[in-house]
Length: 86
Image (cartoon, rainbow, N blue to C red; front, side, top):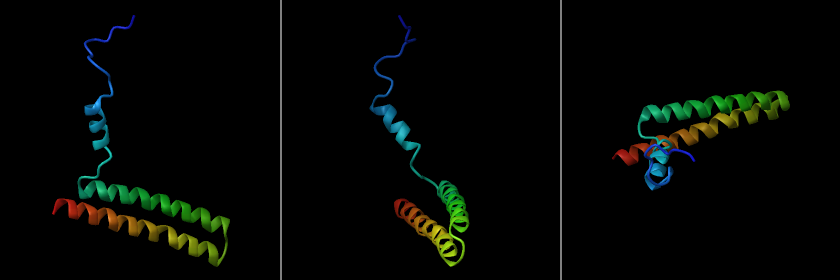
């Protein structure tokens, strides 16, 4: 049989779920800007694919829309962070 080395109860109890869920909460502005940077680089990469897939005006419009969505999401993240701190 397996030796559990002193573990009592299940590994994923309610306390463990709260610890794991705290990893996905943005607490500081640095974390918010890191998330926004990641979203921005992904949006620009998607926009470059749109430029290759749809040459001309339609590709440029789709490229422009991708970062605009990140600007709106970033503003929402920063606004919710400031409201939470206030």
